[in-house]
Length: 183
Image (cartoon, rainbow, N blue to C red):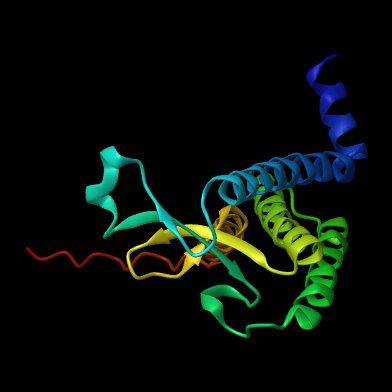
């Protein structure tokens, strides 16, 4: 296939390509998130911390701590699945709708959407199947999180970077001040 044919095919099928990117990333995040949560549930008793013996010195800074979170990030709004489940379904639908309408050709936008979608669905699966989200990554006194949470946070950070880059590139350049000639 020539370059012109590839460019024409890309113009004719941009939505299918963007959804492929999103679903591959979201699928990978969901699979890794669910596998890590399964591993934690199988190997670390609830409300117990764990680190390999060789890394025990690290326990004050980082450890795996198996907890169930019925709230949102930072443990806010505990026991609110009746809000979070429909809200997550709306967010997932909103992401898919927004992406289908967006005319931007930046692949990083689709990566961010896939990261957010994967994280949202990963935590939704927990809420629907066990009634709470399994969190297990504990760093210092920071909140305890999981792969899905990290994916959502990375997505938001990427979107902020894309927004900054777009705004920086779209700002008009002011003409340079003429230099004064001092003799």
